[in-house]
Length: 293
Image (tube, rainbow, N blue to C red; front, side, top):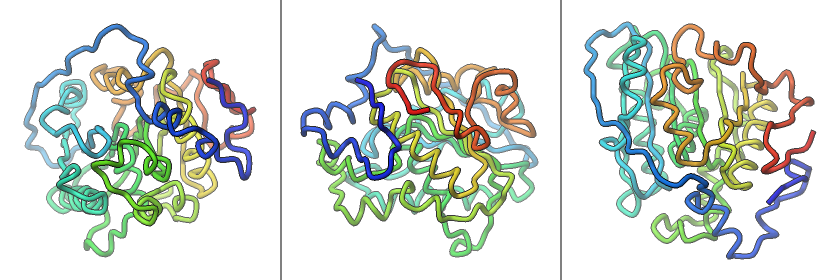
C-alpha cells in the first residue's frame, strides 16, 4: 500500500479507512516480512560512575505489554562506549492509565538528573509506545518537578505520536482512551508550538522500511511538526527492517541508534538522511510507501 498524499493540508488518511484496514495498520505483526524472531539479549552491566552520558530506554508493547526486564538487550554496546544505561519501567494498562505512564516516565527522567547531576547528557530512546512516551518528554513541565534534565538527544523509533486512530482499534480495549485522553497525550498536536529548552538537543525520528504506512505517516508528520517548532530534528528510514527488527539495531555498537555522546549523529555523515534544512528535498529510499517530494 502506497500513500502518495501524506502530509498534504487537510488530509487525514486513516479517517478514510475501514475498521478492518485501520486495525491492520496499527497491528505491527501484520507487516513482518521475516521468518523468525531473534531472542533479545539479557545481559546487565552496573556502572557506578556519575559523570557519564545516560541512555534511558522506554519499551514498547502498545502501553499494555513488555517490561524493563525484557528490554536490556542494548546494554552491552552502550556500556562498551562508556554510557550508563537505564531501563525504565511504567505501569502498563489496564493497571496504569496513559496519564499515569507519562507521569511515571517524567519522574524517572527527573530522578536520573537529580541523582546524577554531573551527567554528560541524558539521551531518551523509545520504541513504538515507548517512542510516544519519550516524545512526551519534549513537552514535560520540568519546573513542576524542580529539575531541568540535561537532555541532549531523543531516539524515537517506530512511534505513535497521534493517538486518535488508536481509539478505533482493538488496542484500546485495555487502554480505554477517550478522545480527550488521546488529544491530551498526543505530542503531534503540541510539539510545533513547544519551545526547545536546549536548542542543541537533537531529535531523531526513525521508522523501518517494512513498518505499516500508518506508522510511516505518523513518523513523517511528527518530524515535520518538529521542524515547524524549530527543533533540531532528523528523519531516517532504516532499510530492510520491520517494526520489531528495527529495535534490534540497539544491539549493534556501530548503529545510528547506539551513538550516544559528544557526537551522537556522526553515523549520518556521508549517508542519506533528512534534516530540517533539507525538508523540501525529502525523498525516502523505499518504494513502500511512497512519500511526497
